[in-house]
Length: 518
Image (cartoon, rainbow, N blue to C red; front, top):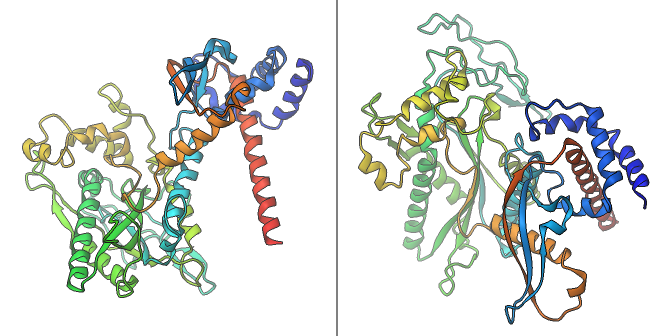
């Protein structure tokens, strides 16, 4: 195909997708003005002037949908695994654009939708493998007692909400926010009644009725120590289940996978799959079925007990020498997980639900920023907004000298330190991982990424070595060169090609599903 034909094909493919340009303006020089016409010109010029446009698209395919790919410069070697001899070497100077493009890998959908989608898909596979087996996990886990649990934070003040109720038709509907027959003024004279039925996407959701009544300090400390609360809760559950099993001559262990969701009010709560497993005396790390007497009823009762009784007080702080009580809220949602039973959530549904929240952060509160510094904190610590007061509380409580008991904070590897509040002020105090799991629950994200990387490596192995019987390795030696696409036109081309590839894969999956049904 000639370069002119390439340019015409590019034009035809781009006319329907110019809106993507606005999503990538920040990948270029902030002072450079970008308009759709110039971006189309750059895209057509790339297709017309590049000697092998197809090779360029193939070269950028692995980072095609990324907003801000990492540019790497260096060389890769094909090495004999048996002898260590370098069979061939290729430098980035011989590649299109003289660099290798690597996707940024950011998990947040608000930062990079493409990389976040990859992260979501990996999390989905990880969660699903722990429910039905596969990827190194035995299929028998589908028969293990398993609970889908939502752990909530306590109330720190009255906020606008969209409480759900299930109608006679089984559909969930939003209830009136905060109905009261008589006025309900706070100490500052603000009526805390609301007779509206809020939509799920309203910005009002999560905002306090009175900013001065709301306990922002307690909330950010709870966010910071919620991971410690989770650890203590799981440790207590494991200990009591272990004691129960010992009394009955059995052995049990608890496995879990969880994600954190940031609510509109700016506090984290956890969605978790908690599975009850047995213990193989010969291979303790193997995933085996528990005894029949260790059923879902036992698991659910133990979870409810430890959630109600696990609490601790944070270390003394200059602003609160007694510390803050860290405990779970009263709303605990606990449901069994089975394959397809009426009234019980299914495996694929809960896996998709957890994976969705793995790509979100603090955007639900209306706050979105990079890590804050002394020079940027004033921009976000706005006393007139809920999110601004949360950011301010993080910065104020996390100031130097906030740890009155530094030895105790250091002894716990910094988990209880207030100093970490400033580091995680952009996350409203929450500094834990948004998705975690126990060691034996399922496979790992690392294993899934390595499998994908190996597939790509085999796919791009040079043609002259395809027929070799000798096993080879590809060893790279690269350094950072830049971030982002070279032009907005390149971003438009790469993302359009990636979108077409995703659509093609979706159609193939639908055809395979239809053929299996028939």
